[in-house]
Length: 185
Image (cartoon, rainbow, N blue to C red; front, side, top):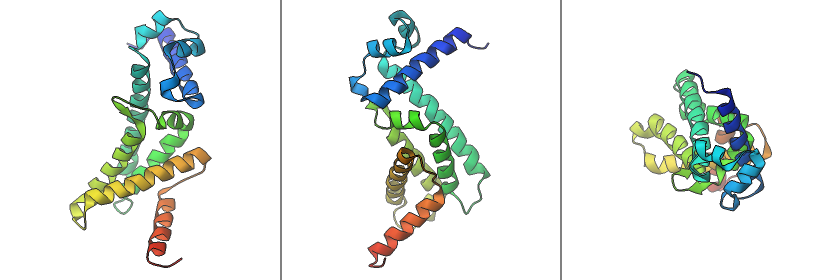
């Protein structure tokens, strides 16, 4: 059975209000009353859908990450073996860019049960390990953390700028870093 259209509209209004507020101020500074005022709903309506602001932001992040994971899985399965985790990273960035405002709004929210950027980092780590972990060259777990840190940093940088970004950019930047670390330019 499809969800009642009024419920869908109400949830969209509340989630949109939270997104707009997150763009303006840190999560800790947002009150339920501010969400109610922004969404133009009453307290009873809010609490009929969410336990509190933490539940609201968690549900928003869960839905976003479910979309990200679905896209990454589809893209990864369609990619060639040589692309490996990088096809997944391209898919991840496409999904983030498609919901850029929400992604940037959720990026720094860290509460009990929610660490959006940490979940992105875990997604990148898992993609790396599932592709390269069995090779046993060096320390794959350390490599996955290093790649994840760099990729997540690059994702945010490119999202904030609204610039295009692909796995080719990752390779190019890593090549530059490697050459510089070896004393080259």
